[in-house]
Image 1 (spheres, rainbow, N blue to C red):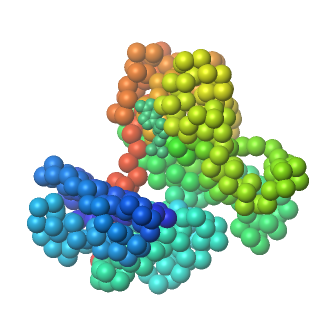
Image 2 (image 1 turned 90 degrees about the vertical axis):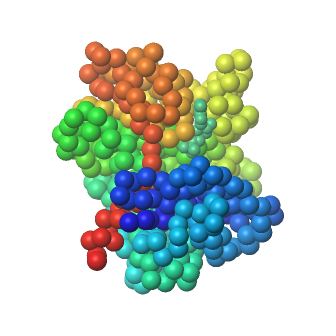
Amino acid sequence: MKILVLNCGSSSIKYQVFDMRDESVMAKGVVERIGIEGSFLEHNAEISGKKTKIEEEVPDHNTGVGKVIEILQDEEYGVLKSIDDIKAVGHRVAHGGEAFPQSALVEDEEFKEIKDLSRLAPLHNPHNAAGIQVVRELLPSVPQVAVFDTSFHQSMPEKAYIYALPYEFYKEMGVRRYGFHGTSHKFVAQRAAREMGKAMEDLKIITAHLGNGASITAIDRGKSVDTSMGFTPLEGLAMGTRCGDIDPAIVPFLQKNRGWDAEKVENVMNKESGLLGISGISNDSRDVEEAAEEGNHRAQIAVDIFCYRVKKYIGAYAAAMGGLDAIVFTAGIGENSDIVRKEALEGLDFLGVKLDPGKNKARRKFAEISSPESRVKVFIVPTNEELVIARDTHELVNGSS
Ligand code: AMP
């Protein structure tokens, strides 16, 4: 069975085609700058090794998905004889609210719910829904599945997801912690458990998804019991451009002192803060780490703040779970930066965490990086959200036929 996985953002569509017989990737690519001058499609036919970049106007998502369907059947760069070979389409959807504790087949009712959830994720769900709509039009007989960033965290207890605000805010407006990156946290925790030769149900794991967006999750016996992102992906760790945890009183302070409206404050906290805001150099951790090594003080405190927050959350989550068996690092920074991993785990010997400096040099591949005497295992696990989407899609579509 061949499955197309789509991740539709505001101006981009990422895609992968999986052959589920062996879960291999047949093709992958991205349509970028949709609706903006200079749009292009970059396509990589994994099975033949042929790559191409097509620079063409892509005014909207409809045209974008159309181009993906076209290239997948292309004589030279295609990987399918006919688009009818695609038996299901899986979508990454940012917000599933409380309606979707699991991935779901998208029929009319689910589609409406996903669109309605745009009130909670106005920057993401409308584009995810647009992708579903386009596939409905272009491939009307193909079943579609939505896999949500929030679902895995629906197992959190009330004490972790209710904010200490008037309770009606939760009941009337849905103001609560939802958490994000759920597919990634689940995937890397499962892999770590497998490597330890244990069931998730027997383990307490902390997963640190450290990319441009970053979040950390406490997984107690297979269930997410707390996570650092909250009502939106702004809460928690310091990120590339997002501030993460701050005193909420800073918001009205800025509004009063700078005369900013809500939108301006939101923009600064989402796009001008984090590594970029502190260092004044870049949101890319490589640039910031390099500048720190060259002695730039602001870059050094940006790295220190980033790592210190990870460490604080590890301590908090070990306490919340009453123990810890493994820590997993994933995503761009988590998989690559030995500096961040080392600094975030420094001084955690009292918790039974001991890093092996040599093994910690590993990058972008699975590795156990704790020393043999470390009671808590530490792993690097490359994340693969697309594969989780393909697996859930496969399971749901096969289960329904
Ligand atoms: P992601 O959002 O998962 O794609 O991660 C993006 C982040 O990973 C950026 O901050 C990159 O700078 C960072 N990253 C990627 N490769 C490396 C590397 N070799 N060393 C440090 N950070 C890296």
